[in-house]
Image 1 (spheres, one colour):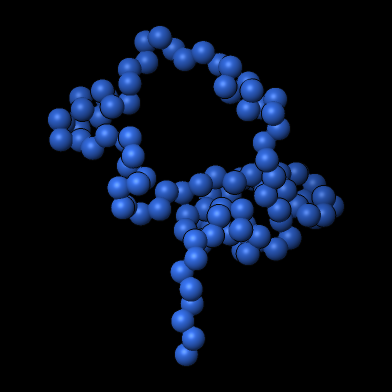
Image 2: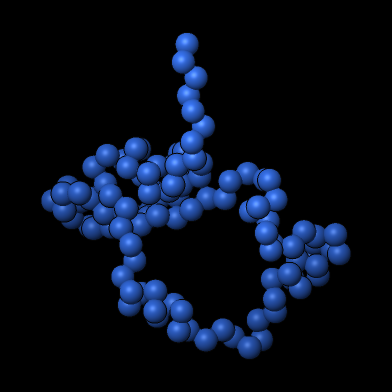
Length: 106
């Protein structure tokens, strides 16, 4: 029996493999620019401060948490139908973890 190679797929490759009639699309620059240009609230505490407050001093910092050898983080990928007539509502978002799609919206 042949062994499967454990090559890590990108989220876009997982979408192509698991949803053959859909393709990954990039966000429009205007949406990304709007999100990047929004000022943060001055009263928002840092996430690490909140983690210490509610989870204690031993709480792990989120900096580098994905590289700590834990499970693969999930990724959100915006997808659109290859044939627009197949899905008149347009794009949707899928959640990819590892080599599987674990959630969909839209």
